[in-house]
Amino acid sequence: MLLYWLCSPYRNIEGRWTVRAVFVSAAKEEQGLFGDEPVTYEISEFAWGLLPNLRVGRFYVNGILETDYEPEAQRIYVPDMQNGSFCSAFQIPKRLYSFLDNKILGNERIWRFKVGDTIYYLPCLEMIRAFFAPSKTMTNQLLKPYGLESLIEDAENIDSELRVNLSSDIPQSIINDDMVAHLLWLTYDKTARNSWHKVYNGIFAKAIENFPANPISALARGFPLETIPPLENQCELIFTSTEIANSCLIHEVIKVNGLPNFPFEKVKYKHFSFRGNIGNTETNRIGKKIVPLNRDGRYVHADKRKRVKTRSNQPLAEIPKIVLGFTKLPQIIKQAISTNFTPSEEIFTYKKRNSTNTNSAKDYEKEFSVDESYFGGELRPIEFAGLKLVEKFDDQGLNDFILTLNFLAKLNPHLKIDFEIYNLPGELPFCFINGRIRRNFAIATITSAKGETAYLLEISRLDNWQISTLLVKFNSQKAILKDAEQILFLIVKKMVDNNGHWVLESLEQATKFRFKRIKHFNDDSIEGFASVINKQLLLYGII
Image 1: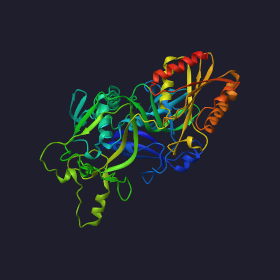
Image 2: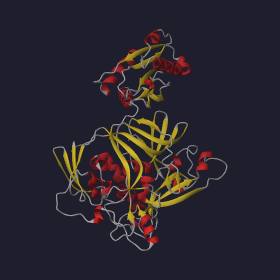
Image 3: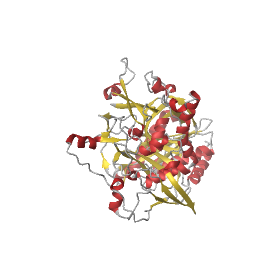
Image 4: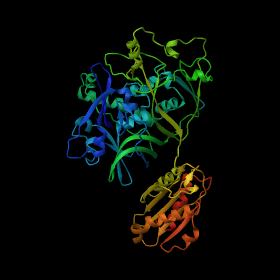
């Protein structure tokens, strides 16, 4: 089954947050959802804490996310994530995506923004999953009035060094440097914090508006979640999607690059479970037991009559990780609590249940849950490890070039700047980086208000390959639409055949265009290189 859509959570009769997931058959997805036959779909309900493992556009077999199949992803560079507006799912063009005339599906809130000529639709629920919900704990905290604040017991900032005591509400099994940095970003970055709080504050405000006498009971209806992007300025998004013409619906955000600097250089953090020698490898592994989700007899239990016990050593279910790229991450240091206290088995080890009843023992092994934990609960809790933080990843070697284009657009708001990224043709060693990653190149199209057009050719320099950016301007504007792409690809092919260097003799003999090589230097800044290109565009009559 293909996970087709997700609907915002509501509080069920037991007071637990529940999310609806819409599935369609894989066969119907392959045939298309817009045929003459009515679409058969199923709406399943899950605990809200399962959100980290619910990926629209992915296939599930017997409730298992199929990780062997990865849908094709695309990337875009967004000049300003805040430059957008809200709409409902029903406002998405019908030919792009059908919501089956179902109000529960079609009322979901969408963040709509534009890059170039394409309008992108990012579901707020997917934005929440990608930025806020890498684990069950973070997901459940989202729908609490002070959920974020309660995860840090106290913190002290001394000379750009932050010292943090983490709350016992956080299971020891999910605590690592990435989790701590992510929590601190949400806590100390104003834009991210406001975006987090908008989730709960938004639905509670709607509940008060609709049922002022008893807003809590109104949450049983459920309201579409809404939030703004948690980052400002330019960023890079990598995602899966459905796209028709100039409209694109984002399904799953895979990577985000361009998150800001942290306001401190060093972080030291503690947790009540960190006792003894932190440097001991075996000690660090305690509580990191990995269990398969819905495989080998283990699954997320759906018995709503049972509550989940409180435990710090919750087993982890591995899921695909969202990758968040920050400009710079702080140094993060884990510290132990100095004490002679001997930890109990309940906190640090997994008890084995002895039972003469074989069925009972077998059932015990199966009963995991992503619901909220309660003292005296019966079910074993389970957690997700769904987050990876990196410093400004650039897996194509073109990130600085795209940032240069963004800065160039700021210098000249009247210019229209578009670009496409391609794989280099050929099988020569130069076509691959480190022998395995195919090298890419970008063609940027820069058009003035008067219709004058120039092109920039940029080759990936992920391995610091020495090659200039090539500026090309055709002598006749009539040739642009007809011949430009073909000629530009021919220039690139000749460069490949010349072992990764522009063929100057061929370029100098060309009669249809002029060219200029713009050299890279090690000390180039984004702004400086954009200014150099700006001067050349001025000389070529584009500005």
